[in-house]
Image (cartoon, rainbow, N blue to C red; front, top):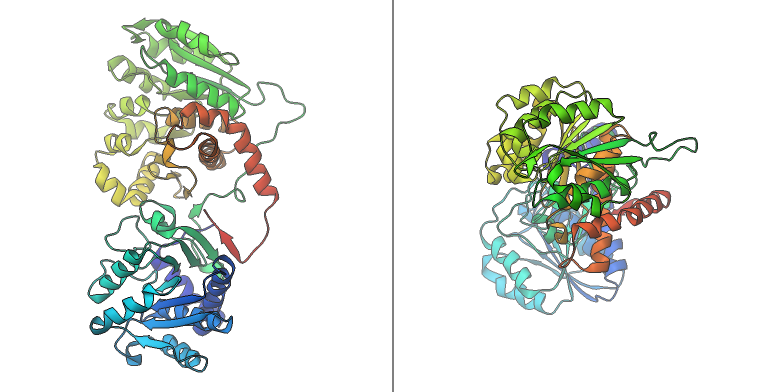
Length: 524
């Protein structure tokens, strides 16, 4: 499913009208009718409904909604935030004239009669927010800000048309915005529907097809769903080597759990063989906790890899039948580990770099050039702090411009980037972006990144890298959601996620099989 920014959806809307000949009024009618149908289904018990509309086309959608709700027998009052009809957009005025043929419950609202609005909103059971659409750029100003605060203070159920008013469609950040229980958006989801904190204001998000021509929509930014992923298949004639042998390189005294979790996750994700390569001082602890996985202890120095590791480990990997390498989990950051990461990047194998592997990578002076010239896929899985160290850009700036910075970094370094924050976003070297809107706050705990790295290490042996990463992030997030259902978010542990990977596979397979073509899709 494509995700569009505001200027992109405006271009799709304009091209659909101008080049396919579908009138804007038809699109508005489709939008309003679709919203009304969802409202009548999900809020069938609401009798008294207030539609609060703006002066632009989002307000026009609201007027169409009001008409259909009125025709369905609801007690609907329409409040328009404008001085008079002359302030409305052309399509808005046309739909207002149609509405008046069905009902006279129309009220224009401005600074002078806010108390009148508040009195009516207080007695309604549902509010439809159609004040601002995707073309709006914050901040909210004037009496409209007071209206938004009024609606939030009333704590009524609110259905938002396209986006909660006050949000920036292209950003997760906002100052004043409607707190919605449901959001119904048109054609495509927007970034504010996907990424927190804005996504929290959206509630349930439905995407409805109103007749926009998809050929005008750019396709490089997408939402990962069960319907657009590939699941690996176990060949009937295969053996354990057919399904890949993952080398997990990491660990140090006090951090043995990181490689243990990563290895167990790789096995659960379908790796034929998984071997951890670790400092010898933690081998006993690791062996006690691994059954299906193997370990290779190498010489260590003060509980971490020795200087010899930079030669010993690449040699072991080259001699063994390893098909992918995952490096960094719990390995510590020092001169020896930095040199080891540098040498591992010379391997002619796919490599996943996580955690301390990334911190060591950031200490290599010319690491961007090294990544750029690699002939095999490189996958980096940083959270924003690690990405800040890699880029030299503050975490605040990254969060405010994550899409541009992530896309540029992946292109400049010829690497695949899985950026982890409130959501996971995958960036590919050729400019594709994939958002995952699954997962929960309980996953913000130690070890979940190690689990993801192991899953990625297993799947890049089974699928093309881009498909492997899409599956890895939705599999990881789905397992986290299933674990939260059983354990609760507060007590969720990384090992709970590993235990739910098999169930997550079955869940994704079932959802993929049960796909039904529909003009309305819920995305969360």
